[in-house]
Length: 166
Image 1 (tube, rainbow, N blue to C red):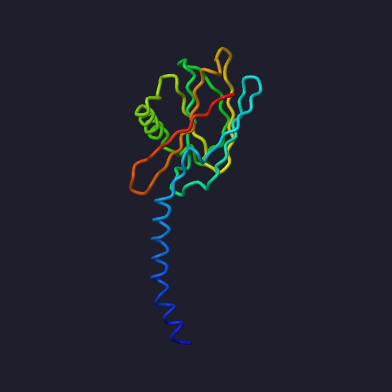
Image 2: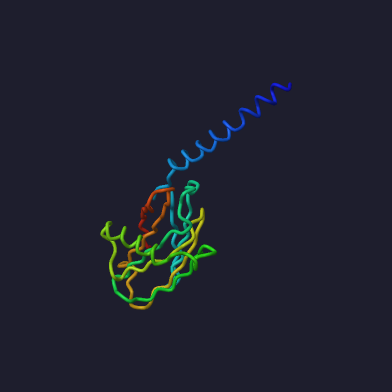
């Protein structure tokens, strides 16, 4: 019986290290994709409520905030957005994040002067709403959900999914 306890004690560090390596490897490999999130849109006058739900668990190395990009086609149009934010959103280096997302949008040929970015907390279920000012045609609106991933020792990576209004 004493030899079993000694062998368990000697094997435990190896088991812990192998478990940690397996955990890191799995989470480096596991990614969610645009097909894993779905959106439901409800409209009431000029206010749109978007409910999103992930069909798979979110990746561990996701950034705590994702982004909603709204392109109205007209520069300087104010959009009122209500969305869940991370609890320490004021301490984020927002200008760096905005510039990284805008740089990626430029590469995707999406960034325009009329595009507005909003941060939204990344969670399994989400809901946000926005109100369009008068004179904006909803059919000309382009809305993108931008997911941000932050692998250890790697730069931020992004993907987008278009949200189409009814």
